[in-house]
Image 1 (spheres, rainbow, N blue to C red):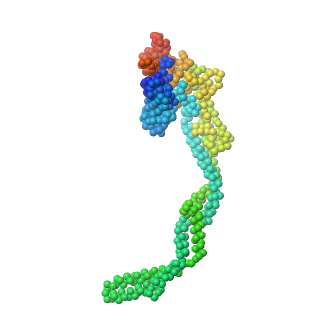
Image 2 (cartoon, rainbow, N blue to C red):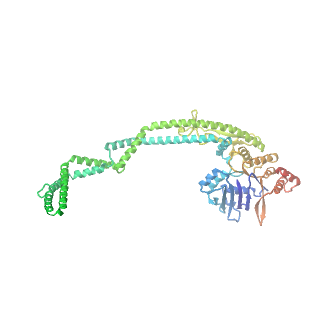
Length: 571
């Protein structure tokens, strides 16, 4: 609800502070006093368009600030959380407009885009009259109002879940078909690449092994010559290292017989001879195994050339080639199984669509029942508040999807026809009304403006009050064209409605004003040489006088005071 409204330098208002209360807040005053200016100022903090003319002449800027309680409104909390705005049970909304018509908006002193301010306003306030905050004039809200009134929340939630399921399945199917089509184009290429790679059958470390073998084969002659010379040097020459070590060992053995200090040297020399013998055997064996194989040499060179070409084509390394082969192998195998997978998904979608359509039919049937109840109830209220012979209809229609891809959407299937659907069902819901005899009902958004709309809104709000979540309703010019008995009924309707919402209403009629919980009188006064608008929250005694003035004009009489007390319900 709106607790406090502060207005500075806006049109005729230099400075105004208003403290609103729960229930029915009534604003009265002479024509031209500035009552609607207060509503215009309120609309600014609800995100409506700002204009340079809003700024009071001589002022740098207009400032409108409102304090609103959230009352656990989760939608508002989520919106503010998403905007990074810290909140408590109250928020402070401020709008500043400069002389050029440029404006800034703040929520809890955090700069906020005006578009976000409008979102916030749409969640908190319904403003009826010559303003845009009229949720009931937006056809897209009608289906939600119908469902809320009928208590269809669980059925709608079940439909939404089933709709989401089939929507996801259809997305999977589209992706699978798209992938299949893409793979079909690549299938021949993949088949060729798989055949090419498999024919070569590369191994991750093959090149290193082949290059090592190639090096040996290319140097076979050198290896043979060198190992042969080493064998001769070590063992097979007149002064071989082996023979020389034998001579040295024998000499050391003779010396050790004289002095034991040479015993260790003799053993070391024997060890050296054993090492030379071991090297000799290795060199001899290696030399006998050297293979002068030109054919194998050519094979290795060809293999390395083939592998090099393969590397360049498929990733730069044999590891990349092997990885790529695994990848295209899987996709090629998947392409083989596409029809089976697509068939399985199509069956799932068919079953899901059948379940979705069954829920949609039940939901639509319930809505049509509820629509009849709403229509009868609203017509009754409209008659009571002076719009006699009114006709009100809740039009529910369905749209056949005649497109070729209807099966590839989360549509509803009834018989052989597919129907467009959203997460709320496959019904199109819109309120139609005829306020005058002989006229066919037309969309609510196209009915006459001014007080007639306000009374139609009052009737709708009266019926839908318990389901409507907006905490504040504002009615401007609700009493245009009515008086007497009808005005009293309008007043009672507003009073009853204020049990579910905070209401701010501008009126000229005492029968409506007498129902106020909080009453403001707006008047135009002179401040120096300029007119300014003032608003006063009236005491109980002042309320009586104001209602009496509305009854009898400027000359308040005992009779009008008595009538005012009767309307207010005081003695």
